[in-house]
Length: 245
Image (cartoon, rainbow, N blue to C red; front, side, top):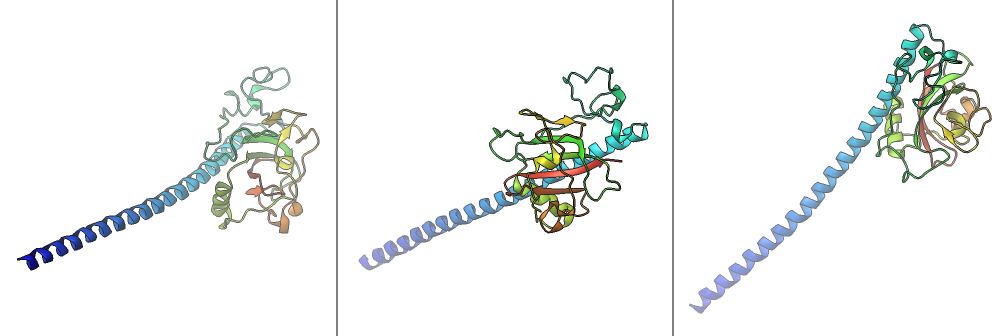
């Protein structure tokens, strides 16, 4: 009788051990599955952000083209935002030439989604966001005249890589030979200006043309749209030519 009790006790111990091992295995597998699924979700979200940015550039280009069909030449296009002193005034610029005015292009300037912005949101000189203007010539366009360029400035590196994968088939990010802001952004002495139509670039001097040697290894050659880094690879900018002469 004692022998049977001993066997029953041993069997119960084995069952409890098996249950404990199964529970531990299930916990570990569950964590691995959750981690894998989180990675997939993050990757898909990055790709979605890339598509959103590319789609917005296509939208802006479409508006510029529609204005061109209506008789607005690229050199006439102005970029005043609601609230700017010249947004409603037609003293020097007709409203039909203003890309953000309802009488002109009627375009809304988009905001960069929080997940696209790089950094903690406190950066200046200039801040992350969309910038547009006619500052210089980008290689790969028909003429050497100034192009209308839209840029998503200071975006997250993974989003930049995902954009290039869709455009070029590779996640490689070409590095500029200088600061990205000197190619794509207008800035007056201390305050960033998102929208401007003059030849003056960052710091009040002329922006540099984006030529074949502006990127290491001529990686920007013939590319009217691309995501690039600055010379120190800590700022990433997605530029696109949306109009020109």
